[in-house]
Length: 364
Ligand code: ATP
Image (cartoon, rainbow, N blue to C red; front, side):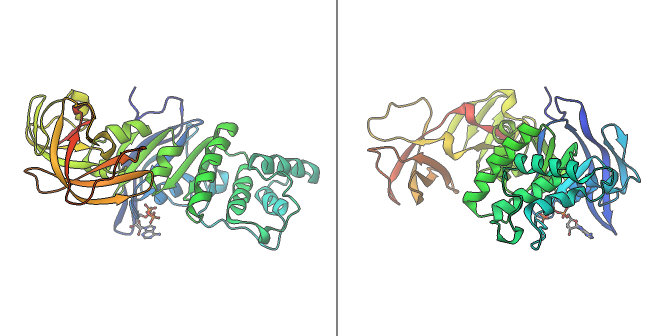
């Protein structure tokens, strides 16, 4: 199945969407379908247009050209508050002088059709969904960062939007709390079953949380795929470099046969060149964890190469070695688990590397 289309009927559908700020071309022809119940991420470096795309879906920005459908309906001229979407912002605008319950109930301010009891029941339900059971009477100013984020989520969910838009919602939290909230957000999304669209510049966050990810550069979608496809079969060197770490080595390409600088000969399958198999000069990409350093007593695998350790970084559980392969100019990074009894090499040591042609990706 093509990962460019969602498995379920699209709830968000964009065709040929362009956005200009004056003469600045912020979105350059975006085509995108997002399915009902998907956890979808827009990932890219600062300034690539991901927030602009989210804001056009929300209705905070007009589209300069193209169409946007939500649940099959054209959104041209439809204001933000009439769309089936709601947004959670990076800086969670909590009112410190109100209680948690009052903050959440603020999401219902336009619902004149509901009486006090009905509103109270909705607030309780939203608090429970966001993991804030019993927090209703608490003063909002006394909450931790993670709890504030939950209040913002509860306030957005209380309106039961079909699509929840999240603009870097976790970026203000410290690392530990961010990891915890990533798991919770994912669980919450599965529980409520509505579509989440997350904007993030954190590739790990996108990989952990998403069903599918659109990687954006300069106002365009460079690749749209599920996390494993993005990581294992990046379409370009640029995408490969943005998602994790990848080593690149020059290679001569002849059909499915490669001659790789520092590594030697390899044979690859067509799907290992997701952007198309080059002919003649190309590059291969290889991830640090798909190579190993061989130690005495290890069985000798079919594909090996020799080099010298020029730098290393010891992380406790892992060591990252920069190894300059013989007859090459740029070191490759090899990551090794620090298993019991395995020694850590030193700078200047010779190193024998094992690698596997099945893990190569070929680029033009
Ligand atoms: P970040 O992660 O830094 O928020 P982003 O990928 O979300 O980046 P956008 O906020 O979508 O990027 O901005 C895309 C480009 O459009 C940027 O170059 C930005 O300066 C420009 N831009 C955004 N909003 C406006 C505006 N209101 N007027 C003019 N230019 C804008």
